[in-house]
Image 1 (tube, rainbow, N blue to C red):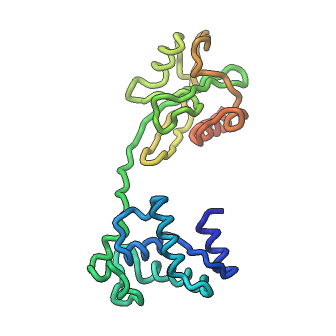
Image 2 (cartoon, rainbow, N blue to C red):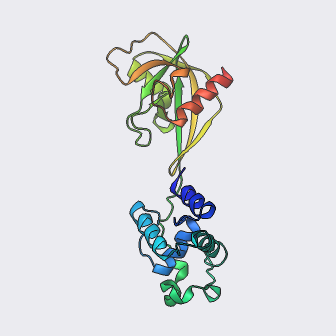
Image 3 (cartoon, rainbow, N blue to C red):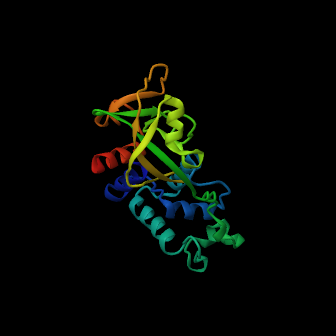
Length: 234
């Protein structure tokens, strides 16, 4: 369990003096302190937890935590803080400066970027061609069905160049949608028929069975989604 759940159980169920730090409490503390830093950062979160712990009455840990959470949920709300109704406003620096709505200071969310990809499904008996990904920073070092950017000519063109063989799409599976940080991936798996080729001198490629994915080989959840499509549709 995480620190939030552990603190909630220890304080609310057992009365132990452990401060709970959820989003509501972070917001309350950030406004009381008029915190200039991002409260989600590990070092800042640690400091906030220490401050909350120093304010906590040792014999009223449960009441303190529940009061802080309710204060954030009902009065010290994100967009319209009710400073005039707040029981701790006289101790709050943001209320004093009349700028509570500017806190906490969180980084703006990055705009979602759509990424159009193709995956090549090359099969030899019960084994599939996999590639250790390089050049896609968000999948670097993981094994995956070979990928290509749709705008760069697609997977047929890329694999034909690398494997030095002819390729032909025999079927398209349903599109796989996947999100990684701010990227929204739309991936088209293609079943490929190939000529003869060898993986000698190509250490970034190997053959593997579906059941090896995530067990023998480190893979991303995207790889497992594609494997699921293969099971369902082939």
